[in-house]
Length: 133
Length: 90
Image (cartoon, rainbow over all chains, first blue to last red; front, side, top):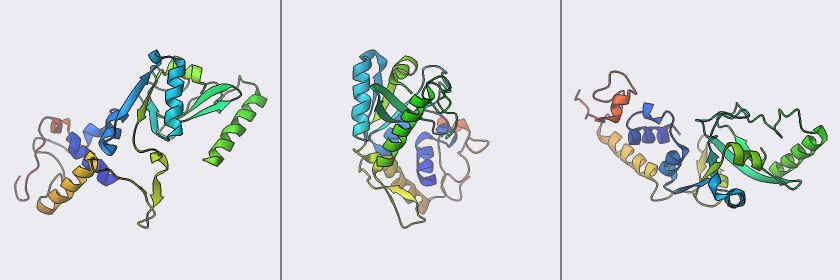
C-alpha cells in the first residue's frame, strides 16, 4: 500500500495533493476501469435497478450525501456495501471508510423509534445474509 | 438505510466497473500474510507508474524529501512544478 500511495503521489505531484478528492479518480487511477454516476433524476426504479445490478456483479459502489443528515456528512464519501430486500422494503447498507461516524437514522443500530421486534428481525436477516457472503 | 431515504437524502451512486467479483478477488499471499488483488490489468496506470518508479529508483535518488521549489515536504507548490533531480544535484 505505501508503494501504491507513493506512485499516486508522484502522479499528482506531492503527497499533499492526495489529501481529499474523489473516489472516481482514485478508482480509475488504481484500476484503469470506468466509473458511472447514477443520479436520482433517473427515477426510483432505475436507480434501484442500477444498485441491484452492480451489487449482484459485486462491483464497487460509493456515494456522497448531498447534505449532512442522519449521521452522514456531506463532503465525505461512503461505500455502498449492498442492497437488501426485507419485508417488501428495499434497503442499502452504507459504510464510513473511517470505521466510525455511522448512519444513525431509521433501521440503524441507534434507532429508538422503530418497533423493537421488527428491528430485531431485520438485524437477524442482515446477519444471516452476511453469513452467506 | 431505507432506499426511499437514500433517494431523498443522498440521491446518487457511483459504480466502479472493475472486473466482476473484484471485491472477492483477494487472496492471502505468503508474504507477510498481506492481501493482494488477484487480478491486474495491463492498462492499470498505477501499475505503469510503479514500473517507472522502480526504474527511476535504480538510476536516481528521486522524491526523497521535497521538490525543487518546496520549502517543506508535501507543499502544494509541487502541483505547479514537479522536478526531481539526479543524485549529486541540489
